[in-house]
Image 1 (tube, protein in one colour):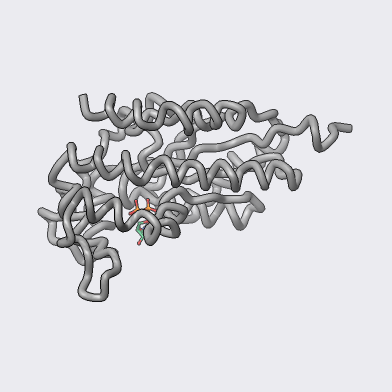
Image 2: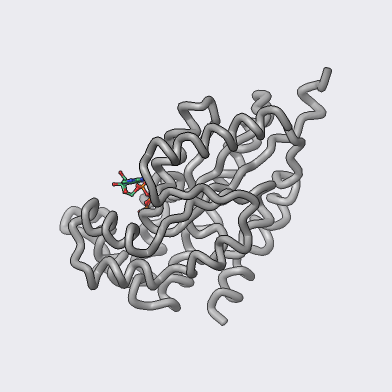
Length: 230
Ligand code: ATP
């Protein structure tokens, strides 16, 4: 029998475009028994500690009257400006990925054999080396636009701007080990998700990605941000 010491947690990176269905799929995976970590949620939990750096970089216009971060103002700023997105990432990514690494290490120590890590910009940020396998949630741009408009109450122009700020689906598909088609009914998506999760459970692969985190997160995150700028 494998000892806890010999185990290496296997990291599935779950990604996909805006409103493609990442959260929906993550919930289905949780229902199937998966441990799920969410990079956006980790970043949100760190917002308060990052606020002084964000205000220094983007000005106090990104603060609400009560001094907290006004996310929609920051979102409007960065969706229009690729350089601003890079500056935002340079501030938010290192602490976020350090937090995620700590959580992954804890889960590994506690004996988890696999973790699903939801990272919306996994491919754009060149971070696929931080996971053992990439699963992409795919749906058509038309469905994405309709879902963004319905969920967030945005105009078609605002929705299109958010979509245009991301890499095209084709880039994500090139990095994918598996694709979850979420253009159809939720029941179809659920069948695919359960199939992928149970196949992984039968395979029980040994993860290698976490060993790379120390070097990559501490020394190279800044480098990726610069590359993105080019
Ligand atoms: P974001 O990138 O904005 O965080 P996301 O990729 O996590 O979004 P979800 O929040 O899961 O996407 O889904 C976006 C919206 O589309 C939600 O309102 C969700 O209920 C809806 N949705 C997801 N999948 C389907 C589907 N197969 N059919 C209809 N609606 C769906």
